[in-house]
Amino acid sequence: MIPPRLIYKNGILKVLDQRLLPDRIKYLPIRDAAGTAKATKDMALRGAPLIGCAAAFGFALEMRRLRPASSAELARAAISTADLLKAARPTAVALFYAADRMLEQALAFAAANPGKFTPGTIKQFTALAEREARLVTSEDQAACRAMGKYGSALLPDNCVIMTHCNAGALATMGIGTAVGVITAAHEAGKVKHAYACETRPYLQGARLTIWELMRGNVPSELITDNMAAHIIKTCGVNAIVVGADRIAANGDTANKIGTYGLAVIAKYHKVPFYVAAPTPTIDSKARSGDSIVIEERSVKEVTFVKGASIAPRGVKVRHPAFDVTPANLITAIITERGVISPVNRRNVVKITR
Image (cartoon, rainbow, N blue to C red; front, side, top):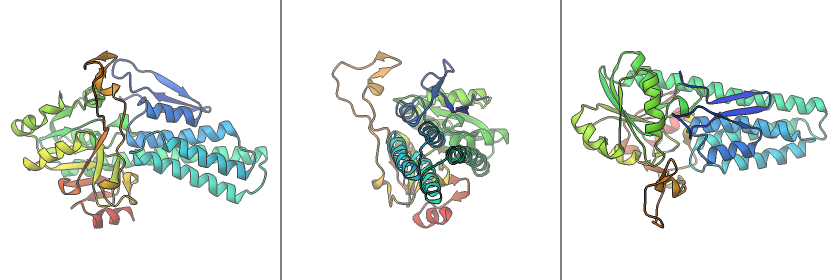
């Protein structure tokens, strides 16, 4: 079993600190939106759908803490809270989706209850915000189950599958997106073997994905990122599935750095390349991948591993955390509403309606 990623109780959000996995299981207590944003930015909290769920609870925490005394005060607090949460990570659209959804609820409540709030009004809104956060979470869990079902159906029997980064239970509140497809297929008896790429520089594959697969008794092996082409060529890989942080309206997909290169290799070897992501990951305002902001993270995440330096002091470093895979390299996008194939603007728009 994978430990709970988020626990919300009595006005405190406990976040599983994923920086310590797989060595230690420890929870961070969070009491406001600033703490939620910091945990997200610092990568204690990661995975696009999970970031969104946490943002919803972080929003509710902030409203509970502030206890706005009037509709105008609620509106101001809600806008600033949503902005604070969204600033934590610029690429994962699930964060924006959840924060904006909570903001809409707050503004609608403010409009319906103009003027000063009574203690009863404040209590009513706090309950509404917490209920909405739980709804975001339950929807994520249901979406993961549906993606697992749709994705498993696409895979052949005795499938040899590869994944990149971590898009499993640890990245969601459910069974996961890409890794959820693998575990669902494993339960259906369809997986012969799974390969998890280590995913430099943050090693989500080495620390998290292979840990999940092992705990689920999925026959699996860990490989370094630069082994992928050789393994695909020589070990019978017949499917690749990854997650996504943002999908443009034409199907171009942003995911963890290294995904684009894996898609190019898959195309050359004629291996189906699947993306598993819930529909809130689709950003209809981004016409193509060129519109997606790519987060640049700390150089220390490249030059240090678990506190130990692995590069010369003073070295110049680039660290784009994501890359964009063009739609024409993606065989299908697996969503909770069904499978998008072929991947093009028309089909992406159709599934979001």
